[in-house]
Image (cartoon, rainbow, N blue to C red; front, top):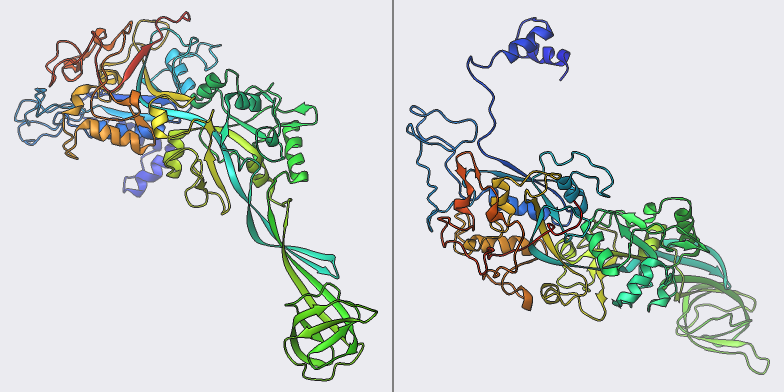
Length: 624
């Protein structure tokens, strides 16, 4: 705040006319003699990275932050001053601190640490922060300050630096996304004797997109779409329209998963997609798992704009549009007939049911039947009512033919056109969470449910597709049957590589490591006092509510239970070998590591901890 502003605030509060500089000095000297600033006694645990797991980890943070901890407030301030550094209250009349790790009194968060999430910047970018490099590993930068772990929706890769442990706690899958229907303008066309005289839009119709009938694509077809082998939906089972290809940003875990699955970079600008003639602009890049930018505005650069213009000019949506056509017709009376019949100069496409007016005769009349002219006699029209006057030859006869025609063209706006032709890739769990879908191919109404974090006008529906005839559903995701499955991870530095971020703090390990809060098997018997459930039950419910699938002993068969996974294999630098004490805080007492007093004791099958997570390491990578 500027000094002038401070002075005005002080005067408003009744402080006299001291100059601004003196006011600031007086404020700064108001700290009691002998008092000093101090670091808090608890820890802030900061996660960064993945967009896919960002909201879910925020909910898990709440579980951890609200878990049982030591007492922070003094009940007897006349004896013991209230600590202001978030330290546990001890001695001097303070409340007792129950940190005995007994089965009935086990603090999950013993020293009231606080877990928070930095905004989503992508899995690869969060890992790069721990590695202290740019996301493309080209430049060393000090970006890991205050970052304790990375959220990641991708597995470790051979290019990751040594010294990182990846702890998987949930599963997900990635598949291709497309719109099924889009809204287009409803037309009211007026004609006079068959010649159009006006075309006015009146509301909207819903039409099928070119990919509406395509619910399955093979891996080869998906590879061909993203590398430009297939440029039209009719090449992969759809109807005639160019494919508008979208991709997510480099550094995204979803992009990395799709890249690994395809075996080619879906974001590469050299991919021969979004083409006008022989010139191709490459994929339109938008943020992962969000559809707000899946529109015409996402096409950047000269050729992308040309592609957009091409779509707009040709209205490249196939399907049906219903047009209301009002055709105003007229003729004259050739000769009079009976009171219910007149002879017309020309039938002029009149038909039974038409409502006519006759010049010189009051009222309107409905045509009961029409007999075409024969043997040089004029056509006769039989009416359902008697005419109320004399029909004079030469009198005018007028009516309107109203019909609803189906045509294979639309006048959708350019955003609807782009969406109708688009393909993207998407997290199954995020899709379920955002739309309330119960399976991948379940059509979701984007006006009611929202699609990709946004609500669109009525007429938009969308879905994710199957791959290689394998349905995208919960069971196939959990058991790994679906062709593009993935784990969701938290990543920490294990301290073995001095070139990257320092080893994760004990507080961080107590939260996200394979032996900490999210993973430890003892949580199946430790009760959350806020809900009365075991912490495993609440953690699994939180993960499931986010659309993902918690890991447990039943995951390989496509299920979820409260039985921990037996440890699988060995990790070069397991958490049990890392520093788990900080000052007088011994976190090992509350973690699933060897030699602790934690309720239930250390649980392991081969030296690594069992639990509700799987751990892997980059320590065998060639990259330093």
